[in-house]
Image (cartoon, rainbow, N blue to C red):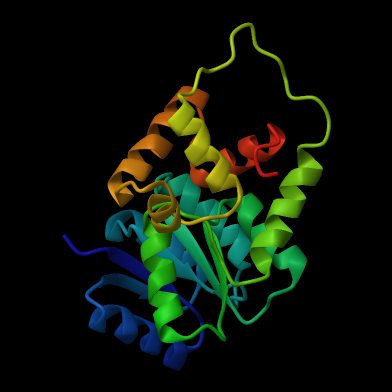
Length: 215
């Protein structure tokens, strides 16, 4: 089954161009919209796996749309595609629930790869922005981590994978470094998420930083 994608952008030519690129790459474009409120209304029926969302929309901000989409479809992944690379815009989008953030100057191959990785739950950022987000997590993580009577017990391999996740490596890069299959790495990440009672890789990265595993 092909990946289901929804495109939200108020510029018709850009929106149609993105939808065309996705279709030609084998993805299924299940809906398009030029307005944020309409996108939130349409999404539950369209059931996209990934929403490619512009930050600047005529009716509401992309950040508000992210919140609305995640409330309506908790499992949906959101890839922000914006002309703005302003730090605050990136942080606001991620805090609202966006999985990744790509500036519109990205090439077609980079964009299509970002959509695929976003669908897999990998945080995807335009080069230079990932460090900004990790830096914010370090700031939020300052101070003692809440202690539990019994901390979750990770295997050596799960800890090793978690350490590489914290360094910002993709699943494919982790698989190559450890000599594992891509699916095995995914399984380790899913098992770790379950043990730590976390919901996605962004939360997992924050946890790893809190534990000092990104050094």
